[in-house]
Length: 237
Image (cartoon, rainbow, N blue to C red):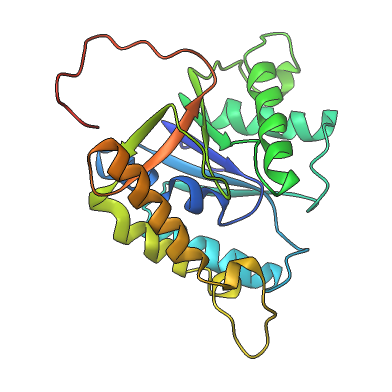
């Protein structure tokens, strides 16, 4: 495993989850010099379209578009993201190796159960990774500073948004990299993802932007109460 440590590590149940929810934010953070990473928990082997090989190729391409430092895949079973010691331990090792300050996970209120299960698994691992006596063989304890939640299929009222106006084209390109998921072809089947899904995601970010006073924004929830050091008079992030 690469020894590069990260500022931000975003987890998703499947390749494309992170891009849907916060691709623009990852691109923005990378442009600001932050080291960012994506960790996909499964290979999405049960997806209606595409193959594991194809999804890996698409994920690499999307990660390059978003300028992520690292992309990992845990190869947990698709539809098998149940809480277990072995999965938690594997994630603890990732967190202790990459030492992210901030972790992002899917928001649990979503039509796909794997998204909520992914969040629960990662939350357990984040907590255990910070316990010094928890499996010290997995590396030195590391405490993540913040956990935030991004939206995949839902349209929720976020606690805060991040302006991605300058990154919206990169987000769209990253999503379009997943041709097997979002483009209906002669050898694929129709799903909710092949029915203009990318445009719907972009329009959601437009609506979040409209509510935030910018062109495009991504919405997030915070696990713990956020405290501002100073009042941002008129500034937008």
